[in-house]
Length: 225
Length: 215
Image (tube, rainbow over all chains, first blue to last red; front, side, top):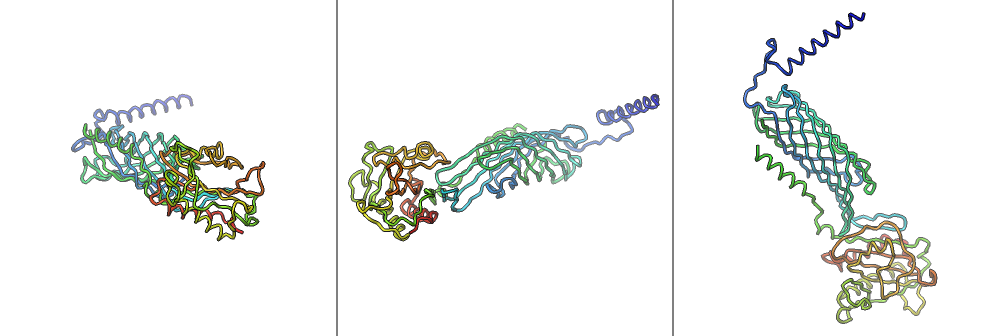
């Protein structure tokens, strides 16, 4: 029994080694066809996107979709099979909502005003994306995950008065999207993606236990090598 | 490649600096109206009020003579700097109190409550309220009664003014002094493009949100 186990382990190690040779030194494996790329071998890309977001947490404060936001980022290819890309994103967005003139009563005290609620959101994250097809294709769908830090500033304005408070938190952002080029292996592409953001930013003054939102971004991608 | 990096760099700076705020013209369309009252007081049992017409008190941090606070249209010099604002305010108050079923009397006719109207400019009023109610005042001896605690936003504007209207119970005194039973805080007067008209609208709102003030 023990001998059988040792033999199985040795065989497993042998195949594992063979597999590693395929990925990292394909030229030494004559049985496998090496994919020859046409055109430039892009290994980096940069993007700038218009980001639209709808808040999901504490919608009593702000619930309107924000059309004021962008994302800037880059990705670097991690391996030669063209699928795994890592990088970083910087994103910002401003959420705002107007509440018409109304009276708010707390015990014996009443206050009447119209309110402008704002959330200023900034984040910086590390990202990793897996592309389903090789980057040479016209259309390259992907799924990704970002992890980083987020800063939210919550503000309320009324007449010349107001209050604001900010908080930091951890950001987790799963994302699915697609890069679309006008031809194969295009230098410029369109990026479209849906994302869900969870950040642990809490603020008791403004009633936030965390800040979550869903978003859609569309932008331009510049491939580089 | 270099150009892209430069573009990304300046783009980041631009978007980081981008922190839009509401349009200032929209912000001051309406004034903030705050009212509070002593909920142990039954306003329906009051009948007579005293309100000096055509005058109000004015406290301004730039005023070198803090005793010189009376404002009226017929006054001279600094004392008429608010124009007919005092007339507008006291006239509107009289109209509201009469409509609520109260009767105006003179100070000597033993009124149930006294109406005191004043404008405060360039003082950090909200902080004063939080820690030392009415501590900013002088000249008229209204630093008594009881204070309202609770949260008030602190403000940081270079120039602001608020209109205060206060009712003092002249018959049920607190430690021998008139007892504050209702107050109204309306602001900001300075930033409003048409403060007389918006003030009248705000006084109307103050009475709307104080439905307990009726005979």
